[in-house]
Length: 220
Image 1 (cartoon, helix red, strand yellow):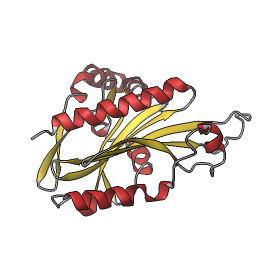
Image 2: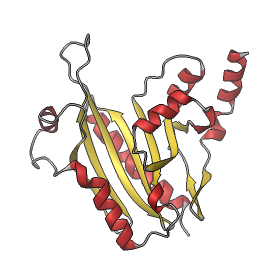
Image 3: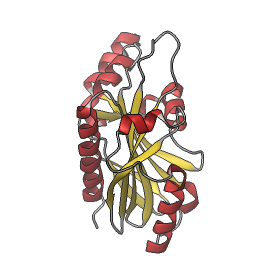
């Protein structure tokens, strides 16, 4: 029965990738997982919900938590997903019922980015910079975009050393993009393991694409 249900759900996978609307205050915001990823909300999995909640503050409401199609297949078949890349979209509960003004959005940006500190030296080695930071703490690596309705930054983290994994350091890249969509404040984040320059190029491109896709979906 379990295998049959998993096969049925996987056969319906293209439907999960379709755009959908979520209520945010009095507005309906269009959301869509990027190509190759699927929103996990339909699974009702406490484990996936727990992972999503660990990525954001309790002061935010999770709108979408997406994992790769390959990870979703593994999860539905009872295997452990790799979770090398994933993404989340949230909205601050305190602003949910308000029509966010330009001034409120600016304050939202300041509050969201306050704890990241300043960027590393322009010509510095990013990995050496992350090695010098506290393990598990995200550090700002640079700004990707800033205008009146979109602010996007790149972060990096050296993960805590794991017993039994030798001395090979593990790194995580993430982007945080703050959006004012139809008068609603959203924060979207993309995550990727950092093993090569390809991962850095991927996360920058995927962040830019997802941002523009969401803006397109929510154009008035």
